[in-house]
Length: 424
Picture 1 (cartoon, rainbow, N blue to C red):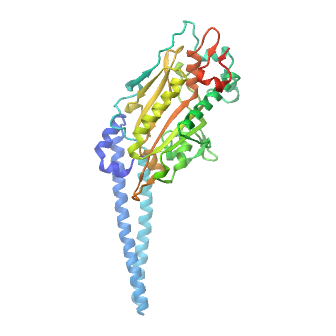
Picture 2: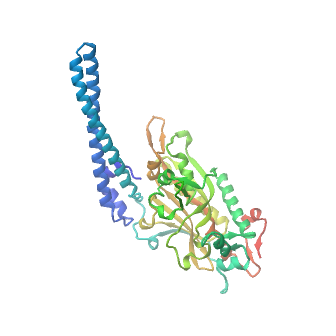
Picture 3: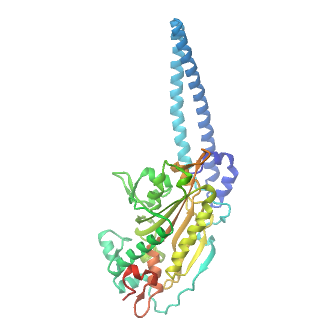
């Protein structure tokens, strides 16, 4: 959530920045927020004046009572009663205005970083780095949704039977490959200084609002209405919410957490060949890295996180490219995002496997996540997160790119984790 004083003081900058996203309601919502903030401050000022007058009269009443001037004191008590009534009415109006302001701010996405290019969508993203040669496969190479049937390692029909479409069952070497990748990603992250967290996979409404999934992504989250709990779309939500309503000290930074969780997304409206097989699921496994940093260090941290994810892809021997997302493809909360995509040889297409984002103060403002520096000054921190990595498309690329007449060869870095070198 943008800070209202930033919106008020930098109105044109905010509107121009949101224009990079193609956010058509920018001016309307920004001006509404400014108007509500003005109203809120005016009500607060008026109420403060009344409370000050009540306090002054209360002292005067005390003095009159001590002096035996009871009638005068009683007369003033009548004035204070009227003032208290007015204050109560203003307090109610203030609360209503603050809620209206908060709900308006919830609808305004983050302002992209100045280096983020404008653009309408994925076609306007910029490739900033590519690594590795694209695989050369025979003409009869199979896409992963055929390979998993051939080797009986992932079963979508069984998943559909017990849950529904988009909930695969992993079997045998397919299940072991999943476990191997999770352990590999976690061990690499902890070696890099990340603290492993095993969070709940359901969160309350406050957590959803804290990291910005609500109200923006409400229709994409699985909601348990009886308990008003949500299945997590990513470990970012529970891990970042560990720091909700927290004031950190300088010695607490940097915060570096990593966690593995299953993730749940309704993916409403998804269809077509581009979402076949493992390309898009309702439940999938992911290892997530989260950082909390000082404002002047967060973009260096973003670069470090990107380099770390790129290192994982190199170890897995997967050709990849790094994309700087344009404004129109940015997530609601993000100020800057890099996507990592791997090439799946049989599909002959790039698959996104990681998004690494800097949210600047956007989440921290919702979370009230702050730092108290050595001078005693309190300010908001910056939050970052990234997939390191999401498993389904990694598995898809490994299966497709490494298929041979003998079977599917497993990247060497995983051998100690899988206990096998080939799927055949």
